[in-house]
Image (spheres, rainbow, N blue to C red):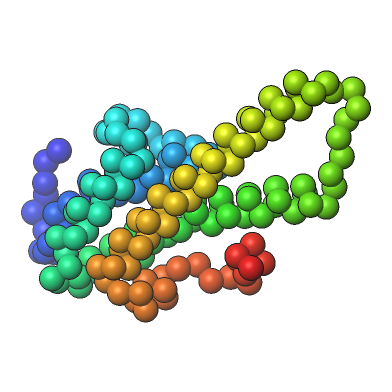
Length: 163
């Protein structure tokens, strides 16, 4: 890739790598399809991507304002998949609580197999959610909770799943 000369100073030299790591973290979300850049750029797991993400951001603890032009995009790309997972978990929990119906035709083994598959999906979603929230925490550790809080989604529809 050739760089074109501009009058803009770019002090966030790991910008592309950070956004690729965010794509890896959000692509591991069961609710979002993997982006094309994640499959070709990196072949690392979410925990490794999170560790590398934290290491890069820790470099900016001394001068966090260098990240300001990129923070809104970073927070959105981390919070939207997390928001989707929380809403999915809330909707699945509310449907389970509201209508618990078992089909009589299914035998015990099929129900246990379905339960195991649902538990695996739930565990995967919770694991992805944990990684996304850890990444948001890493960003807020560098720039500050109050600054990042302004960039987070804050719609009324998000209150019910959280409570």
